[in-house]
Length: 380
Image (cartoon, rainbow, N blue to C red; front, side, top):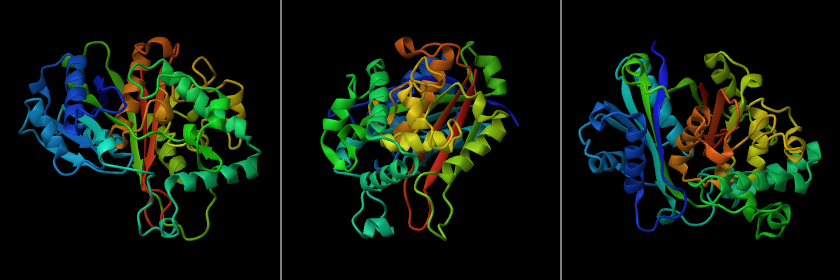
């Protein structure tokens, strides 16, 4: 099968956009990705659009705005992994030989579609007793503290790191650095999590142009980055109580990505990880095998996950700092990987990076560990 490359990327500023809707944001990211790829819009052969709360035919509205109505297009909903799944579907269409140039876009106008904390599906036992996603992750944080001795200060440093990175990202929702004290003194959400431990309600969109081996030779501008792996799994049925401090779904998806890419976790130079809450980053970098179980909080405290550290995590600012517009998140992660691997990340540039990983996980359904998890590996 053909290889797949990211030829162009585009992204709106993440934040609150009261004067735009999801299609406006998606079309802006779409057009920027086309320009960045150095191609004509009509060279795009198909498109996939990831979103969660935007209703029917959002992708078609984007195509109409950019003058490409009539293309084959699929709208993709897969919880927080919707945009990342759109990338995977686009890559599969290329690998299958159906198309050579495909757009994947993720968009969400969350401020007009959602209020309050996200909750599990009403059929889920945790939802039945009133649990929200912050309370679920708060329990996971408490359990991790009990098992591994993580301190509250160490957990706060995850948010401090990510918002410091976001301050150097002109497209991030938050552009102000914070301190540990700021985290610990922010509004309580679900003990021990406070406001700065939680990702915000965000609007935004991102897009990537994916191409085949044949197309990259014809259209390549010297800046294409290879998509070495794009893996997706859903959680298995919970038949017995499972640990709250390790994610088998993340681990399984990562192992499949490493195998497809022909690398191991030791080869990853940096990663964008789904940090919907500060504890989520801890659990997921360990599930990805990037740090040993129980070791990540201490590594953050020592600066190992900083830009310039041994293994930078979330140089874009992550969901905590850059924002989390659900359908846009997984695509934005890949945009960051591409810009880092091209050397275009400005003040947050990671020197010498050649292998980047993006992890996106989201949703919860009754009886299973998690709804969807994706891992993308990009290689320079």
